[in-house]
Length: 254
Image (cartoon, rainbow, N blue to C red; front, side, top):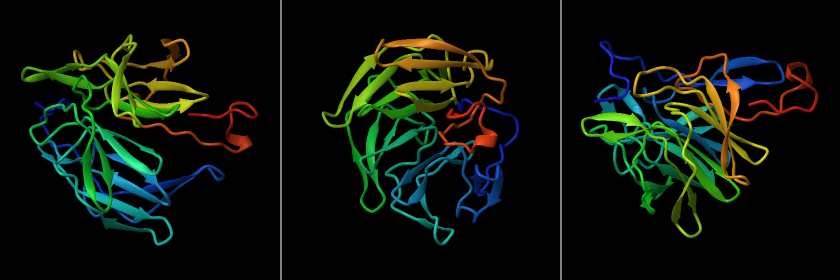
């Protein structure tokens, strides 16, 4: 059973846009080659990679596309070794690391692997807990994973357990569980701390408007207040905004 079970088929698209913070404007770019949603997008070198995802509610994808900024074109790279959606990815030392997600049968996975656009997939140590629709961020030479859903017999339940990964020793370590469920949440790292923003609860589909921040120094989660919205199936990134868009001078925004 897919976590977003619905009576109608959700729309997927190939659209791609670029945001210009200097002019506070959006620009339409070339479309991707394949319709996809619930995928990951990462920056490696001077290219962007759209990894996996689903074409519709029953069809996961194993395809990966590379976007060239200079030519404004998309091209196919090495496929994943299995269809995958709802996964998370980070780039570290120029390599793409991917964790969890849904397989072809929409089961949550424990797998972690290194994806190379030319060679394909190299599997690494498994996580202790299965998860999908979670967050993963690189912080202080480790990958921190939080939120998402996990398998519970035929259905899913909220995943509150959190883990961090050492890419040098290939070892996962548990850290403080989330105080609140965050499925399909956004995440970002700011000033050495991990932020998890919004999402929803798989148990009752209520929106989790809260923002939680994890401090590796104190090893605790902090409640940072509520989001105005939207809060579900969102993404976040860091931008150095021009002065006229900042909330206060010298401040970075999520």
